[in-house]
Image (cartoon, rainbow, N blue to C red; front, side, top):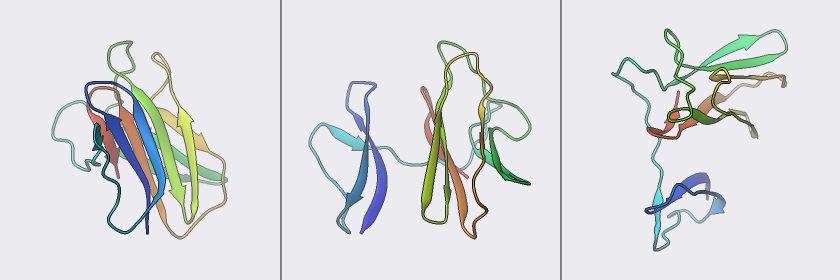
Length: 123
């Protein structure tokens, strides 16, 4: 079973999330799978960086340089998956490109973020 894939409506800024699909994933006309990127060679950083804190996790977009948060170019959401739990924060232009998740510690931790221009990124 595949879980948790994001699709973009072609020619449209709308995103859809598929929570559960069969082992071959989803194929629907008019939708394209949003593939996660993991490396960023540009000066604008997109890879989410996870810092473990005493009572949770801080996820920042860009370790050395924060991602811009302008009306034209910003991070729309940051999420963290801790073991089998998913937590998400939606952001707006002008906010810091980071999210603090006060959640129990886990063995498996990963983060993703979605940039309105450059798409989906994971660590």
